Amino acid sequence: METKRKALGKGLEQLFSNEVINFENFEKDIVKNTAKNDILEIKIKDIRSNPYQPRKTFNEKTLQELADSIKEHGIIEPIIVKKTIKGYELVAGERRTKAASLAGLETIPAVVKDFNDQEMMEIALLENIQREDLNPIDEASAYQKIIEIGHMTQEEFAKKFGKSRSHVTNMLGLLSLPTSVKELVENHELSMGHARALSKIEDVEKVKELAEKVVKNSMSVRELEQEIQSSDLPKKQHQERIRETKSIRNTIYERLMREKVGTKVKINKKKIEIPYDSEKDLERILDILGIRIEGV
Image (cartoon, rainbow, N blue to C red; front, side):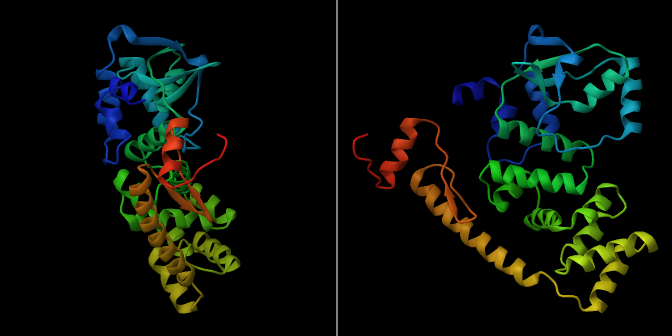
């Protein structure tokens, strides 16, 4: 695995480390380290979307503008895809691919690389949050998926993606909002500020009521906060303090165990998860933990 990663270039080494990375540099590095003969013209109809694409909707106006640019100048930067049994899956470049199709192109230049599920998810998230504003709910859902699949703490995620810990916590808090309120955020009827203020309220029905009031009366975030404060509504502060305490405690435990076994450890929902790369690696971890299996 290490040999293959090095062959993919500096950009990928940075992606799969804990460094904060810039997607533009990452993508250019992959293309730069790919010989021109290895850049293929692939039929657009054979390309499927990245299954981990966090963006559910695309701005039609900006897509059309990109399509017009492609008609005039062509595709400047190749997309990145992964070979599959049924054709190809997009890793990066979904907007270019959609715009190329709108422009009437049948093929698109592409670099073919191999990625696992976590890598594809991280790349899709990076491309979206660094290139074009992502819907807050989609972004929060992507954060949660990467944290779970990557066995990361919120602190590790924040560091890797160049976000503050408080930003990550606030984003994840949006996932607790009622479905109807999430839809208002997705449709841009409620801002991130409104959603963040509402996510602190414990009473679900009151959250729905206030969300409708914000939309109906075009309330600002400040006005909503004043309304919440004057209503003296029960907030989720107690639960949040408990979650924060558990998160800090689990982070300490995870680091201690990681130092002992030499690999990432995830403590979540009364489970301890320790991933391993091979049978030999599993035997190494079991030996460190002092676990012996008789007859094996």
